[in-house]
Length: 462
Ligand code: ARG
Image (cartoon, rainbow, N blue to C red):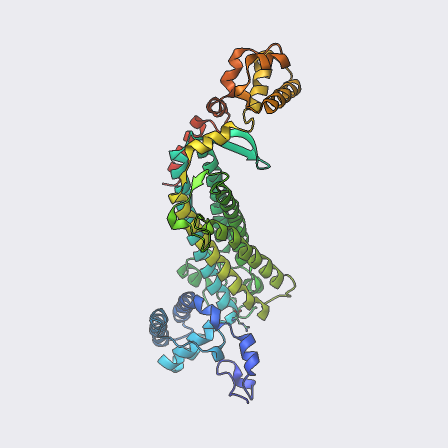
């Protein structure tokens, strides 16, 4: 069974494609998401063609009106997408021909689908960078809210997930603010680099028509046109940079999600998730599962996967365009959707969760968390070399462990049996509040330092 040849490019073809060829070739199922960008690019191109005298003003006006009609048809869900027309570019152009007739055929002058798709996709990814930026600001604000409420709440700080030293809740929240701020700057950086217009590169070599690429670049909000036509149609770095930035951001989200899963467990009880962000079990009535956190943790798989998939698609392609590159879009769409959902869910969870201050403090006070403070005291007050102080403290930890108590519960006699010089004022440094208050170094966990950072971030995010 053969169909008639393609109306866009079928001049030399006697028959249409096999049904399976059509299935593997078509991208309209997913690239319809580029409709608004495609129409914006076409409008800019048509206006430029008229300004340069390449098409008449009358034709350009008909094209403009036709494109606006198509946009409203698509937005209103009234547009009929056709797989036979392959992709968004040809679906729009075919509909334009239905609507305005012959002038539609002039739109593709000095243009190719190769530069067209490069423009559309850049515009789409650029919007996603902006959306990620906004979502990250919202998340940082939610974290700042938590940090401010508990700037001086003591909790255990961990290394190897073993109690290390006491820190403050505010300090821990601000650690993520720092990470998400770097994520923002990665998206901003990627956006800045991608903001060049490939429109007018045409198929690969540029065009003999007297086009004005600077004008179309400006109308579409690009900083300038791309400088090499071959690069313009074959570059997908911009999508890869978005995926790389997304992957790092998703990794941060996943680490935090993992902490929330641990913290909300019955064994930790550091935080309570609100009902809005938990689910129950169909069999175990006591359960309150942190599903949103778990799913955020899992979403990273899709985002990393997209990054690897597109790197793999691109890595062996000779210049310039190859149809392989059509596989870029689904990866990026899925990664962007996953990232935005994960960011929104994390923001909601953080805004709603309640830290359990007494449990945080109790946990901070156990596990010999102030052993380093004790060693530091021995250095400062008794002038012991740090290595010796470390050894003495280790012996005291062993004594406490033997007695089944913590360091502040030891008697002065217990201590002096290990090192005769130890005095009663050592107990001042064994309390967790004093411990955190003493960590005044820049970037340290002391509440005064934490409050300074909160103030700095609040100002920065205004
Ligand atoms: N649908 C195609 C894509 O996504 C558009 C570009 C087609 N170009 C071509 N020379 N067949 O990449």
